[in-house]
Length: 601
Ligand code: FBP
Image 1 (cartoon, protein in one colour):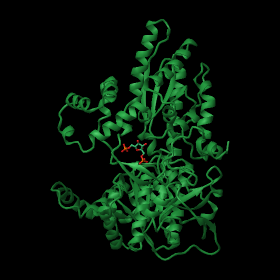
Image 2 (cartoon, protein in one colour):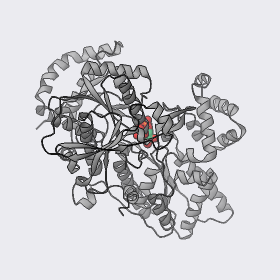
Image 3 (cartoon, helix red, strand yellow):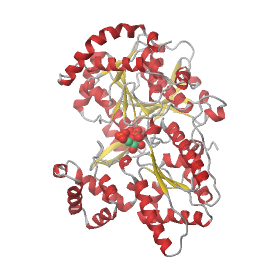
Image 4 (cartoon, protein in one colour):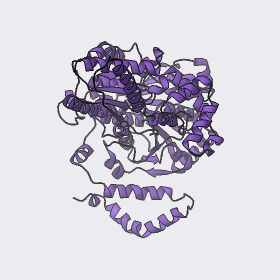
């Protein structure tokens, strides 16, 4: 059946739509005020639904029913534990969050009877980079709210936190939700990186929530967005405006985890997607036997993605930024480390291999970090720099402003990389590491060093390298069963936290190395995960970011095995694509990182 017939209301809508569309576009061109934005977004969304053609897998996934913890299947009882405290800086955090500090941990337990609540209107926001499973958090939230009371409504704020501030929203109906079940991406309502941190923004939020009768906001985001969720919760409690705020742990980077949050959603799918590609490349390398592949992997500062991909695919080399920093390594040290493996393999007749490079590597090389910090300070709101025309003028300006040591390092870099270091900063003032082509930098430096060794008669091999960057292709993949189940459970669980009147909590689902039915659900006070850190020169309360722990089980396992993986014997693993159907040991496995961390392997 043609998808359009499934939506009779769309047919009706279409006739009006066709007449009005040209006028609406015209208005947009004339930059009329944005008061039609919600209507137009509806139109765009409905158009998307109509024009969406689907692969057989998309159709099959739409019908997939995510697995859930037993406790969330029916009515629940919230059991409160002891009062909590923040991981550090207790006095400061308590002072900043007088209303949300010290809240108890919550566990959901099955309860007799039917799950019921008053009708509640809820607003949901997707914040930051895409992560597979975001749509399932929203569908779980929607189903949870409707099951508690069919008259409850879910509104999506459009384009990230700015949707709340600017009052851009769309009601999410069953038809819309059904189209997005178990799909990747954040396109249901869009995402954005606007920071929610100023009181005028919070007050705008109150206005739109009052207009729509919204009693709770769910923020699906990473560490910064969840920190902001807590600031918002605290502000709304102080104002006694009756709006609750609940956070959900999202990011492919895997750096939002701690004693309570076992993993952020999206990490599982992204790593499995990259690991498949790395495995395919390794198979090609092992077949053609002529290329070294330098593969940079997304993940921002932390090296969790690179490490997990290494555990899944066993490459010849995987750099771990946190180790580079701990060993105070220079760029040249890293090059030497790679060259050593290349020469050894070449001596065994193997002029091919794979090198995994975490996206944030460059920031963890101590001297580079100093250079980047100087550039961050120099470029922050620097109007003079912005007016300079041409790369050469910008390069000369930067050189004239840096300290001698940083200037020398800057000059030693290939021009292209040096330019990438001065590109626009993100809203937090940080360099956008996803734009820095470290893999090309390393290829160039390794190549030069090998040429030197060849001239000295110490290397006889042939070095031919290819560069890759795996980032965006993993961020919106169809969520693995793990992420589909985990996210849906997070969403349903959030609906129970809301119904119980909770605020300042993150929706918590744990025990993730066990089958989904045995997962535990609850809530963790966001203040419990906070400490004070310097941001933009000021001490701020933030959720601690989790970097790779060098004494943690995943890194230790990697360290024990990497010499063998680098060795002349080829130890590659070819993980293959994510499997959605089939035996549970193929389809429902969590990441190796999670299993090692939880002592489950
Ligand atoms: P979040 O931290 O918002 O989850 O973003 C993850 C991420 O994919 C990083 O791994 C990457 O460095 C960054 O987003 C890229 O940002 P952008 O989407 O703005 O290019």
